[in-house]
Length: 380
Image (cartoon, rainbow, N blue to C red; front, side, top):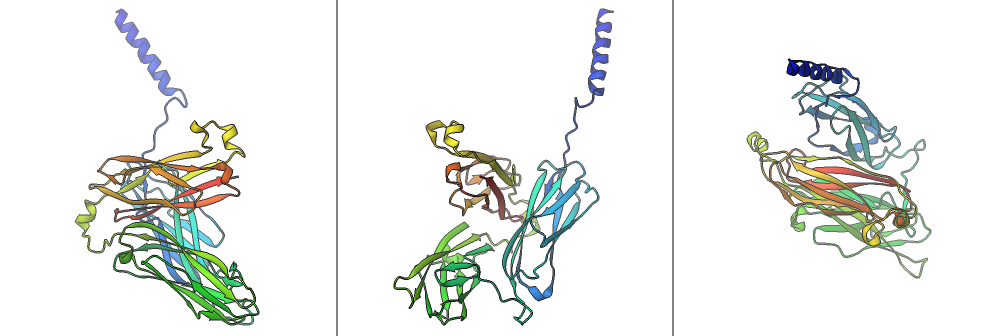
């Protein structure tokens, strides 16, 4: 009888515990999956109007996936998305429209997708290069906001998003001589996989030209993210000393998956991140004096993990950031199915002068997403 009474008390206590608000919160098991989070529009003509791309969003979890909102990094990018819940195993869409009007030159924009998935915020990216409308009296001339001495350039950064063995990446940088004297452009020594040529080599006053670049992954002889600097020297009759500068060139060399069958892809590795955003927030003015670090290094660090959720070995060719203020350490180069590895991202607050917004490029052998980006932000 005593045991029956005790059992009844425990049952009442358990029912009260369940009914109390906030004691137990159901865990949502929706999973948002995007095969390739970056879309390269390539060359976009300003005269053609909006450039549109639709990302396929797949729910690989056990509960319905709800996209609550999608926000773009600027007004030139407009998102639209599936508003109804996406059932487990089903797909939805996020469509990105980029308006090239009045924006000649290269662009790289991010869009944040907020949902009820485990990773509440997922980033998508669109990039490309806008060719301007034919110049007319009613249209302003193309701008050249960058300089190497008297030479004006449209950009000083070239990024080949994905390039495969057997391909050749071609890019052009428009340049202009806005001085009153002829300018001769000399390009410096480069690795075997990259060539550069100025056309014409000598620009007369007010003359425009271009620097042509050609990237060969076969000569690079390695996979992953490759970054180098193109030395540029500008010779002017006006100055006794030549002006030197550099153009940053980066490329993601990936496997050629064209011959993979559906069965091969089903057995392929699959990369998954613990997060696609590393936000250091507002950094202290004197990190070493405020936050104690072993050895007094003055560094601040965050970590992220990579998991192989596929069915074969995941090869991580590179985890790299072109921003020299960001250091990445740790991690394995190969992961068996189900294995996880951890990477540490570090910065030195004392060396940060302005707001940072950059990307870590992860290149791997996942055929559904060989290039992934992790955004890194910090405020001073």
